[in-house]
Length: 296
Length: 296
Image 1 (cartoon, each protein chain N blue to C red):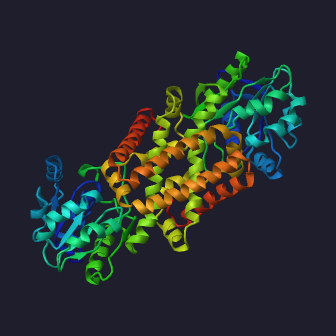
Image 2 (image 1 turned 30 degrees about the vertical axis):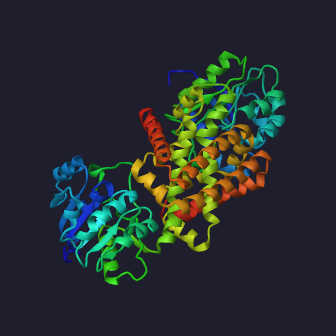
Image 3 (image 1 turned 30 degrees about the horizontal axis):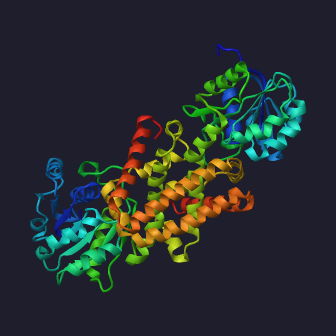
């Protein structure tokens, strides 16, 4: 612990899976924040955080929680940002760095930007890490280790504030990439949001099948379908908000995928073996690229 | 090894991942076949089977390979069945049991049924096991252990022949289910073929994106997309044949999924939070069912 803490008083609003994992890694290392504040709306979450002992201060009112903090990280579903910001904005200290961990980044600028007090630095970030579990008990200090964190500073962001947010994620074990919010939103739409949309949908499609077939589907899900259901086991509020807050990019990618899937279906109908082989080969090629990049 | 072998002379046509795994488990146990014959078209495959020492007889000509066998299992891509059958049918011994391991079963009745000699028993089967690797070196004796094998005897099949095929898969460690070919084809269309179609397609959709986005996609594939590419890394010939030979069921399931995905997209466009939450909850529910059934 040679380095001085990046923040004197760091507030996590929404200590669920991701928020509580930040608290844990900060507590474990000591060089992320000298003091940790956690704020949640639900009494149950507050109790769990107290019992886990992962924050120095546990506070139900977010406006009181952020007072005197030089770092605040929103870890609530992105649909709740505007409401939380309206509540905390008047209480953010000058010089404070406001960040978040949301999966959509254009919506952060839209919802937080207009309410940002003079002298408060907005540096959104998106740690690409998660599990199928949620809540403060699901977190762990190693969640971010070896995973990417995308930082999306708005134009004209304070370089020193950006550097501190990057340093936080580096100390949490992440690899950092910087890009603008619009590019981020397109990339995650195809990498993550569209696969989740399809996974949720195909589970529903199976659930609509005639009773007999549906039972067999569940019995034989091991080969393919199972991988889809793993990502379909995600948090309802978080994913509803992601879809609603990355609307344009998700709809564009869904339209592209639908066109491509229909072209595939047409090739099956008309027995176009060459087209089908080409599509399968592209899948294998991308898979190989991922293995080379150590992402698989 | 208390039990007598189920077959005196068992021929595997196409000793790839699945075929060579049957040879391995048969060799290891001794109670599946007294003697093992392997046949392949490619000299390279024949050499590998010889080098691995997993068959008693290695024979390039399938017609010669099946002579004197009381069991023959086709382990080639389903698109090759009609050609192989035309070649071997005159050489199948009376009383021989002809089975296969293909992923589509209606096509087996269509392609093998008309050429079946009097006194030869057709008992198709589909072991639901595989990896992303292929070829004789990829096989292993434990491939089928704890996995389902669906047996689809045609109407009027000889009960003793069906019992022997079931016993083979039981001894290989599989759980057995019996159903008719049409039900099988619908179930695997939604459980496996459609997920693969989508996985192949989404890799292509990503590959078509503008250069800059595509590079970022590969870099950040870890969360969701990665699961899709795992199943997209499959064998080209096998999957082309599956799509072409389960056309009706795959197209029906694709049409259902497309409708459902478009309804999801419409809900995103119009901000229908309730609809989206309902779809996410159904995904979670199916996931939970799979966990209860130990399929996840």
